[in-house]
Each structure stands twice: as structure tokens, then as C-alpha cells.
Length: 122
Image (tube, rainbow, N blue to C red; front, side, top):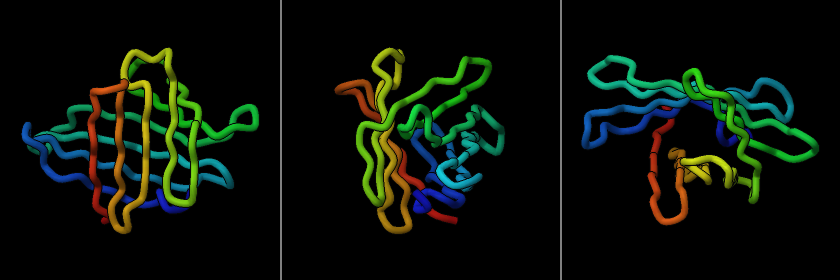
């Protein structure tokens, strides 16, 4: 999972939003990220994420605002990617991360609707 470590910045989207994720390795098997989205230099949204092991299985935990953390259990993992799911979550139900060289790709989906985020390593 060390491929995810680093500072990742996305391009400006059609609404003028810029996303950034900073991933660190906290300890063996535990990774943490702070994610922020800004518009014109003003913070619009932020969230905290962790990849950890619970009950012997990898999971992605997402904390957004004042909401309870949501756990997405890994359904697939290889050397440069993972897919995690939580079918009980309203949206998204699936979060995928993968490394494409100096790009980090994040895809969130709920069946057919999908949002793709591409980040460049800083």
C-alpha cells in the first residue's frame, strides 16, 4: 500500500473545485489521509480517511464532517489498487483507488453513476 503515500492534487473541475489528498503511513498496515476540496482558495469540504485492518481484513474508513465514520470493506486488492464496498451506505457504495504511475485515481460509485478523480503527485 505504500504506493498511496504522498501529496496528491487534482485539477480544477468545471465548477472551479480543486481537491487534494495527503496520505501518510502511520504504522505497519495503517495509512491515513486528510482530503480537502477548495474553491477560489476557500475550503468547501474536508474528510479524514484511514486504511486499516479490522477483524483480519483491510478496510477504508471515511469520516466526513459531523457524520459517523463509514467503513468500506476491501473486496479486491493488488500491488497498486484496491476496491472497497459498503452496500448499506447511501452514496457511495464503492470506493476504488489505484496508482497509475505519478497519478492517483479515485473512483466513487453506486452502481451506474460514477465519479472519477485524478490526482497528480506533488
